[in-house]
Image (cartoon, rainbow, N blue to C red; front, side, top):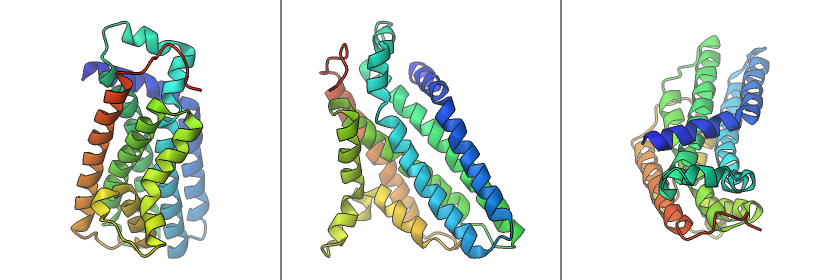
Length: 233
Protein backbone atom coordinates (compact mmCIF):
# COMPACT_ATOMS: atom_id res chain seq x y z
CA UNK A 1 0.00 0.00 0.00
CA UNK A 2 2.89 2.36 0.65
CA UNK A 3 4.10 1.99 -2.93
CA UNK A 4 0.61 2.67 -4.27
CA UNK A 5 0.27 5.75 -2.08
CA UNK A 6 3.66 7.13 -3.17
CA UNK A 7 2.94 6.57 -6.85
CA UNK A 8 -0.47 8.18 -6.42
CA UNK A 9 0.98 11.22 -4.64
CA UNK A 10 3.59 11.62 -7.36
CA UNK A 11 0.87 11.44 -10.01
CA UNK A 12 -1.13 14.17 -8.26
CA UNK A 13 1.94 16.42 -8.13
CA UNK A 14 2.39 15.94 -11.87
CA UNK A 15 -1.17 17.15 -12.47
CA UNK A 16 -0.89 20.33 -10.43
CA UNK A 17 -1.37 22.70 -13.37
CA UNK A 18 -4.63 21.22 -14.67
CA UNK A 19 -5.80 20.64 -11.10
CA UNK A 20 -5.19 24.28 -10.23
CA UNK A 21 -7.12 25.39 -13.31
CA UNK A 22 -10.03 23.13 -12.37
CA UNK A 23 -10.07 24.39 -8.79
CA UNK A 24 -10.00 28.00 -9.95
CA UNK A 25 -12.84 27.30 -12.38
CA UNK A 26 -15.05 25.77 -9.66
CA UNK A 27 -14.39 28.63 -7.26
CA UNK A 28 -14.95 31.21 -9.98
CA UNK A 29 -18.20 29.61 -11.08
CA UNK A 30 -19.38 29.48 -7.46
CA UNK A 31 -18.55 33.15 -7.07
CA UNK A 32 -20.61 34.06 -10.11
CA UNK A 33 -23.56 31.99 -8.88
CA UNK A 34 -23.44 33.68 -5.46
CA UNK A 35 -24.31 37.01 -7.09
CA UNK A 36 -28.10 37.33 -7.07
CA UNK A 37 -28.30 33.59 -6.43
CA UNK A 38 -31.47 31.63 -7.13
CA UNK A 39 -32.42 27.98 -6.61
CA UNK A 40 -32.32 27.20 -10.33
CA UNK A 41 -28.84 28.68 -10.65
CA UNK A 42 -27.58 26.64 -7.72
CA UNK A 43 -28.96 23.43 -9.22
CA UNK A 44 -27.33 24.31 -12.53
CA UNK A 45 -24.01 24.85 -10.75
CA UNK A 46 -24.21 21.53 -8.92
CA UNK A 47 -25.25 19.51 -11.95
CA UNK A 48 -22.67 21.02 -14.30
CA UNK A 49 -19.78 20.80 -11.85
CA UNK A 50 -20.62 17.21 -10.95
CA UNK A 51 -20.51 16.24 -14.63
CA UNK A 52 -17.24 18.12 -15.11
CA UNK A 53 -15.68 16.28 -12.17
CA UNK A 54 -16.80 12.92 -13.58
CA UNK A 55 -15.35 13.75 -16.98
CA UNK A 56 -12.16 15.14 -15.48
CA UNK A 57 -11.53 11.93 -13.53
CA UNK A 58 -11.73 9.95 -16.76
CA UNK A 59 -9.66 12.37 -18.82
CA UNK A 60 -6.68 12.44 -16.48
CA UNK A 61 -6.58 8.64 -16.27
CA UNK A 62 -6.56 7.96 -20.01
CA UNK A 63 -3.18 9.52 -20.96
CA UNK A 64 -1.43 8.56 -17.72
CA UNK A 65 0.27 5.37 -18.92
CA UNK A 66 1.37 6.77 -22.28
CA UNK A 67 2.83 9.85 -20.59
CA UNK A 68 4.76 7.63 -18.20
CA UNK A 69 6.08 5.60 -21.14
CA UNK A 70 7.17 8.68 -23.07
CA UNK A 71 9.05 10.08 -20.08
CA UNK A 72 10.52 6.60 -19.32
CA UNK A 73 9.44 7.13 -15.72
CA UNK A 74 7.57 3.85 -15.79
CA UNK A 75 10.80 1.92 -16.31
CA UNK A 76 12.44 3.67 -13.37
CA UNK A 77 9.48 2.84 -11.12
CA UNK A 78 9.14 -0.81 -12.14
CA UNK A 79 12.90 -1.34 -11.84
CA UNK A 80 12.58 -0.70 -8.09
CA UNK A 81 10.65 -3.91 -7.56
CA UNK A 82 7.20 -2.39 -7.89
CA UNK A 83 4.66 -4.85 -9.27
CA UNK A 84 2.61 -3.76 -12.24
CA UNK A 85 -0.65 -4.09 -10.32
CA UNK A 86 0.80 -1.75 -7.72
CA UNK A 87 1.85 0.68 -10.42
CA UNK A 88 -1.66 0.78 -11.91
CA UNK A 89 -3.08 0.99 -8.41
CA UNK A 90 -0.91 4.04 -7.79
CA UNK A 91 -2.12 5.78 -10.94
CA UNK A 92 -5.71 4.95 -10.04
CA UNK A 93 -5.18 6.15 -6.47
CA UNK A 94 -3.85 9.44 -7.82
CA UNK A 95 -6.96 9.88 -9.97
CA UNK A 96 -9.13 9.03 -6.97
CA UNK A 97 -7.39 11.61 -4.79
CA UNK A 98 -7.92 14.31 -7.41
CA UNK A 99 -11.57 13.33 -7.80
CA UNK A 100 -12.01 13.38 -4.03
CA UNK A 101 -10.59 16.88 -3.77
CA UNK A 102 -12.84 18.19 -6.53
CA UNK A 103 -15.94 16.48 -5.11
CA UNK A 104 -15.18 17.98 -1.70
CA UNK A 105 -14.80 21.45 -3.18
CA UNK A 106 -18.03 21.18 -5.18
CA UNK A 107 -19.88 19.84 -2.13
CA UNK A 108 -18.64 22.57 0.22
CA UNK A 109 -19.40 25.29 -2.34
CA UNK A 110 -22.89 23.90 -2.89
CA UNK A 111 -23.64 23.75 0.86
CA UNK A 112 -22.44 27.33 1.39
CA UNK A 113 -24.46 28.60 -1.56
CA UNK A 114 -27.53 26.69 -0.35
CA UNK A 115 -27.28 28.28 3.08
CA UNK A 116 -27.07 31.69 1.46
CA UNK A 117 -30.62 31.29 0.13
CA UNK A 118 -31.89 29.09 3.00
CA UNK A 119 -32.17 25.81 1.07
CA UNK A 120 -31.77 22.56 3.06
CA UNK A 121 -28.56 20.83 1.99
CA UNK A 122 -28.88 17.47 3.77
CA UNK A 123 -28.79 15.55 0.49
CA UNK A 124 -25.58 17.13 -0.81
CA UNK A 125 -23.08 15.11 1.26
CA UNK A 126 -24.45 11.67 0.25
CA UNK A 127 -24.61 12.80 -3.36
CA UNK A 128 -20.99 13.95 -3.31
CA UNK A 129 -19.87 10.69 -1.72
CA UNK A 130 -21.55 8.60 -4.40
CA UNK A 131 -20.26 11.00 -7.06
CA UNK A 132 -16.76 10.39 -5.70
CA UNK A 133 -17.25 6.62 -5.97
CA UNK A 134 -18.56 7.04 -9.52
CA UNK A 135 -15.49 9.11 -10.40
CA UNK A 136 -13.32 6.28 -9.10
CA UNK A 137 -15.20 3.80 -11.29
CA UNK A 138 -14.90 6.08 -14.33
CA UNK A 139 -11.15 6.44 -13.75
CA UNK A 140 -10.77 2.67 -13.43
CA UNK A 141 -12.61 2.07 -16.70
CA UNK A 142 -10.52 4.72 -18.45
CA UNK A 143 -7.29 3.26 -17.08
CA UNK A 144 -8.35 -0.21 -18.19
CA UNK A 145 -8.95 0.97 -21.76
CA UNK A 146 -5.68 2.91 -21.87
CA UNK A 147 -3.69 -0.25 -21.04
CA UNK A 148 -4.18 -1.69 -24.52
CA UNK A 149 -5.45 1.26 -26.61
CA UNK A 150 -4.07 4.57 -27.80
CA UNK A 151 -5.43 7.37 -25.58
CA UNK A 152 -7.68 8.68 -28.35
CA UNK A 153 -9.23 5.24 -28.86
CA UNK A 154 -9.30 4.63 -25.12
CA UNK A 155 -11.39 7.76 -24.66
CA UNK A 156 -13.96 6.47 -27.12
CA UNK A 157 -13.98 2.97 -25.63
CA UNK A 158 -14.31 4.21 -22.04
CA UNK A 159 -17.09 6.62 -23.01
CA UNK A 160 -18.93 3.81 -24.77
CA UNK A 161 -18.67 1.51 -21.75
CA UNK A 162 -19.82 4.16 -19.30
CA UNK A 163 -22.62 5.63 -21.42
CA UNK A 164 -24.02 2.39 -22.85
CA UNK A 165 -27.24 2.65 -20.78
CA UNK A 166 -28.15 5.94 -22.46
CA UNK A 167 -27.78 4.28 -25.87
CA UNK A 168 -29.91 1.34 -24.74
CA UNK A 169 -32.56 3.61 -23.27
CA UNK A 170 -32.97 5.26 -26.65
CA UNK A 171 -34.08 1.84 -27.89
CA UNK A 172 -36.43 1.25 -24.97
CA UNK A 173 -34.07 -0.93 -22.93
CA UNK A 174 -33.28 -0.23 -19.28
CA UNK A 175 -30.26 -2.18 -17.96
CA UNK A 176 -29.84 -2.55 -14.16
CA UNK A 177 -28.21 0.49 -12.59
CA UNK A 178 -25.91 -1.81 -10.60
CA UNK A 179 -24.17 -2.80 -13.86
CA UNK A 180 -23.63 0.82 -14.91
CA UNK A 181 -23.23 2.87 -11.72
CA UNK A 182 -21.61 5.85 -13.45
CA UNK A 183 -24.53 6.44 -15.80
CA UNK A 184 -26.90 5.87 -12.86
CA UNK A 185 -25.15 8.60 -10.87
CA UNK A 186 -25.40 10.94 -13.85
CA UNK A 187 -29.16 10.36 -13.88
CA UNK A 188 -29.42 11.00 -10.14
CA UNK A 189 -27.46 14.23 -10.45
CA UNK A 190 -29.71 15.53 -13.21
CA UNK A 191 -32.80 14.84 -11.06
CA UNK A 192 -31.35 16.07 -7.75
CA UNK A 193 -33.48 18.70 -5.96
CA UNK A 194 -31.82 18.86 -2.50
CA UNK A 195 -33.99 16.07 -1.13
CA UNK A 196 -32.58 13.29 1.04
CA UNK A 197 -31.46 10.40 -1.20
CA UNK A 198 -33.16 7.01 -1.15
CA UNK A 199 -31.56 3.69 -0.27
CA UNK A 200 -30.92 3.02 -3.93
CA UNK A 201 -28.16 5.63 -3.90
CA UNK A 202 -26.01 3.50 -1.61
CA UNK A 203 -26.52 0.43 -3.77
CA UNK A 204 -25.23 2.38 -6.74
CA UNK A 205 -22.27 3.56 -4.66
CA UNK A 206 -21.45 -0.03 -3.71
CA UNK A 207 -21.70 -1.07 -7.35
CA UNK A 208 -19.24 1.70 -8.25
CA UNK A 209 -16.74 0.34 -5.72
CA UNK A 210 -17.09 -3.18 -7.14
CA UNK A 211 -16.65 -1.86 -10.68
CA UNK A 212 -13.52 0.05 -9.67
CA UNK A 213 -11.90 -3.06 -8.20
CA UNK A 214 -12.89 -5.32 -11.11
CA UNK A 215 -11.54 -2.98 -13.78
CA UNK A 216 -8.34 -2.45 -11.77
CA UNK A 217 -7.83 -6.21 -11.62
CA UNK A 218 -8.64 -6.62 -15.33
CA UNK A 219 -6.25 -3.80 -16.23
CA UNK A 220 -3.50 -5.37 -14.11
CA UNK A 221 -3.90 -8.76 -15.81
CA UNK A 222 -3.61 -7.21 -19.28
CA UNK A 223 -0.85 -4.78 -18.28
CA UNK A 224 1.28 -7.62 -16.93
CA UNK A 225 1.59 -8.91 -20.50
CA UNK A 226 2.26 -5.57 -22.19
CA UNK A 227 5.58 -4.20 -23.37
CA UNK A 228 6.17 -1.01 -21.41
CA UNK A 229 9.40 -0.01 -23.15
CA UNK A 230 7.58 1.62 -26.08
CA UNK A 231 4.63 4.00 -26.30
CA UNK A 232 1.31 2.82 -27.71
CA UNK A 233 0.55 3.98 -31.23
